[in-house]
Image (tube, rainbow, N blue to C red):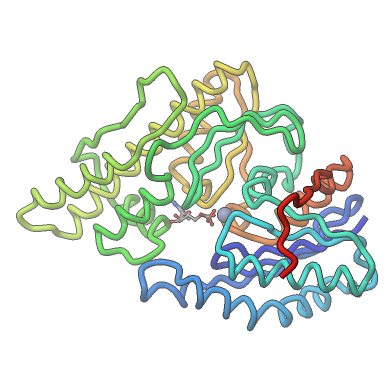
Length: 332
Ligand code: KG4
Ligand code: ZN
């Protein structure tokens, strides 16, 4: 079973081919980061136009790179949501049109399910059930993954997502957008000088709150007479320490609470080196194991969508079988 995966929910155009027996045959990706940087965030209309411009050339290059012909594809998985409507429409129309022409099924995928399952694309993946930490620009969730399609959210953010906190703090430090990676690189040059709050770290539940941390950074910046590069690096260091402390403590608590042994980490913030190291160290102390996707599959990509599609087809969770009737349906 060969599945083509299409991801266009936000500012990355990603396409991939996944084969149930041979694994990932190849993937192609175009990031629009440069396009949106000047605006300090993703501009939806520009994102849709860029997806339209690049999706067909990218598809051609994927077929060329892998030597696969479109007639060889058995099913098409695509991100149906959540995301930007215009951007989502580009991927879905290509998927549905191509599937109609080839007379093959489509598998609409939830973007976060793609992220959740991305670590399973690696060698020696964990088996179900496991705990997942989903940390992206829009989400910070701890999820009990029972099997494909059975996800129980047991921890969530009450305000900002982890990636959002990284990006907003990076912006306060003048690091551009999105600033997660830039902030973590700056933090590597920093020293322990400042102490920032670790919100909800001792709360009994598995929820997060990061907006206070961002505000604490703002106050710290304002309190500096001279915001030198050295001080900026020390602030970045303190911020990264605080946020990764909270994330790893909550993951440990989640594992204790669910009696699960394996944690998978996914989403853009999962690329953070400090978070990866802290989780490895802290979890190994209690004989828990942590799994990450390779760095390029932490952020949005087509491979995770092709993979999720293949998993759903394998477990026959292809489509939601529900349908609706329209008791009040205007003829016009
Ligand atoms: O999963 P993703 O690509 O997009 C969403 O679906 O949100 O995540 C993007 C987020 C951004 O907030 C970005 O700043 C953050 O992931 N990010 C990082 C790192 N790389 C990306 N945050 C911290 N450290 C990194 N190395
Ligand atoms: Zn994402």
